[in-house]
Image (cartoon, helix red, strand yellow):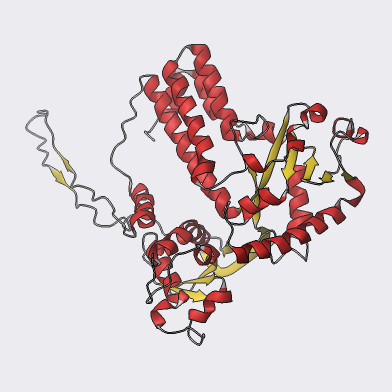
Length: 451
């Protein structure tokens, strides 16, 4: 984004600026929140989209029964058949901190909380932390944060924390006012302000941004709208219109949504600036932008195609007198983005690796019936790969510790029943993929170790 673009929008159109940069999340999080835990909703969001392989479906069915049992026991004293139950008429408005309630009837299984925090706390404390669910996709994962000394240098030790493997996701939809998100609220406000100001360019850009936001779901094989039970839509008779429906996502899916939403927002800002007559032509890529571009190229083509920065020369065109003779200043062309880029911290590196690892593993797999490498079919193997932690030795060697679904894929590793040819070893594929990404981020030596 061009430098100073935000300030120029504020100076040119303060109303649009306020709509663009207001934080809509606190207002949204303060509304009554419904968490849809229906069978179809969780199958779509936590288990591989709309088409789940038979083996995964069997696993999901077993885990879903456990999930239902865990939730029912946690909310045994606050379970109702319908939101229209008389006991709930004033429950959320009169109680300062009412405990979430469960609506449990044929075809309906969802939790209602006074606000977003009530739902988030319930998921963390009663679902993810439950011993029966800890090892499932609804459970907890460990996070490692490098300890730093007073000089900000990693000590080699790590702080270990746990967090839920699932995130709570807002789902914008054109068909339901209660399926919304902070970004949709923002774009809708931009659209309203643009229409009031008579800025047709900004209004058109906002409409296009909304369409792209709704399309994210279709592009990611996401179909939440059709899984929401009618009982939730009918909740307006009890809760009014000011409530929000959310669901559980895998962390990877939530991160994908976030990246795509950021792209939509940045495009909207540039389009609005153009509608206001503000120049948005960017200069050449920064080195850090080249890193991102290189990673995206890996995902798309399997190769990093970084732009070459041309030689920079400075010439003085104005005569400034005989005393000062300025020669053209020649700067050495940039050969690699690794120059002048600070090395990422272990935490940053782990985050970036996991952000791209699934796509790069898929890119490196076979696409047919090859016998020398693993072939991409269901995608289950690639989506199971994860960098669990990273350590750095005193000599600067980076070690990445990764995990993957060993049953059944360990059969292709050394010692497995299908270990030959050795080129099919999953560890080789994962290590290669990790190295490809890491090579774009750090110059340090790196090794990958399976856990």
